[in-house]
Length: 162
Image: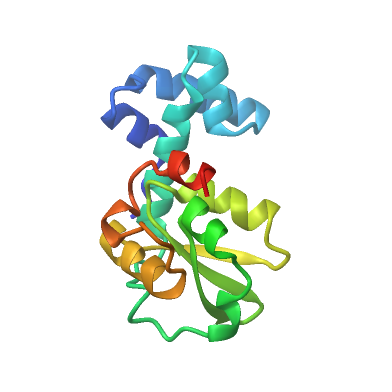
C-alpha cells in the first residue's frame, strides 16, 4: 500500500486531517503539488514536506546493502571520493540505461539533487541503512578520518577543510 504524503504529515503532527482535506480539495482544482500547496496554505516548513516526501519515497523504493550488490567497478569512477561522502552516495551498477545509486533515507534529498544536477546520466535511488552505506563509502571511497559510523552524521564541516 502506498503511503501518502498527507498521511505522513498527519502522523508527524505537521498537519491535521482537516488541513490535509483542504490541500487535497485545492489540489483537485489546481493540479498543483500537494507539498507546495501545504506550504502555501498552512505556512508549512518546506523541511517538513521534504521529510515526508523522503519517508514516502522510502516506502516505495528498494532497500539494499551496497556491499552485497553486484557492483560495476566502472560506475564507481562516475563519482569522486568527495562527492560520494558529501552527497552520501554509492553508485552500484547500470540497470538498463539508468544508474542505480544508493544513499540513506536521511540524505535522500541531497542524493537526488546530486543525481539530477551533477550526474550526466539518468539515475534512480535505492536506500541502504547508514552502517551499510558507511561501510561501502569506506570500501569504495576511502578517505582519511572517515569511518562507517559517520555516514549518517553531518560531516560537511569536515569535508570543507579537505
